[in-house]
Image 1: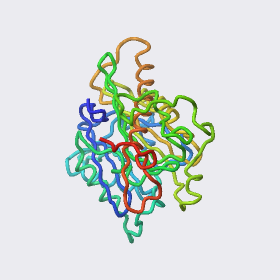
Image 2: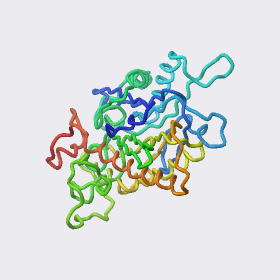
Image 3: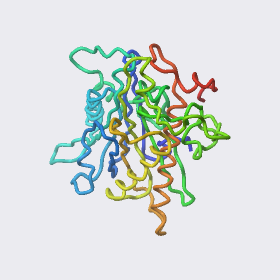
Image 4: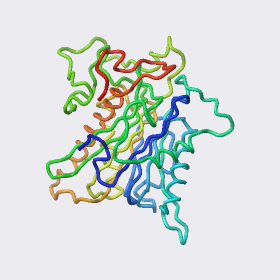
Length: 339
């Protein structure tokens, strides 16, 4: 176990980052087409091909999922990933034609200090192709791919991932780009809201505070943090929860809904009218869930905990770049660098 979503056999992740742009794309590629669904609980999502993931729609399986910066421009990234997959002969068969199915979600990072003067064609199609082409079982967290330009309230966000294995051998993995309106840390302290779920010091190991920090109940947001640092208040946290348990589309949708509890556990506030909070759920179908009635309940609970951990890791692993609007967690709290 590498504590990554790619601990699930058959999943590969690639990042493509443009440092001058301060943005990028992350693509999860499925070795074989897999069952997927999604759930949106934020008020301002930006998506592609999500309607077909509803349980009553025809297409059962997808080939890849793209998470990207760039706001609506970033939806071009899915086209690039789709182009690469087409070259591999992948896709949903329509007669002799194969159409790769690549749902996508985007976050807003247009006001983060990067050069967005790209002319008449956005760079995201190329970033999508590159991220799919580079997909492997190992990938960087923090300020890479879709997390390259991510910001949260007062510090940088980033790309995070985590995994969990149940006693019955089912694996759950999360991948998330954290660009939330709210905080990942408690009040004015360094302590992560996700601290109760941390494993093996994966985001600093400082645990919960001895007493509640000052102003912990006040929802300090990115808009508060930008009053003195210029506009950077676009938001959205977008993620993927995956499992090797065999699920129907309807069960995958329920898993995505339950995984949103991880957003609420790790970000304060979450699911606001100004966030586009979305989670895709993916099933490789490699293993049967145990017969017990509580098996899916356990799966959903662990999905939420794994997502919360991935969010904290994304913030913890962010690294400084030129022209950053906000410091990283490491800079602000003088912690050791992410391993």
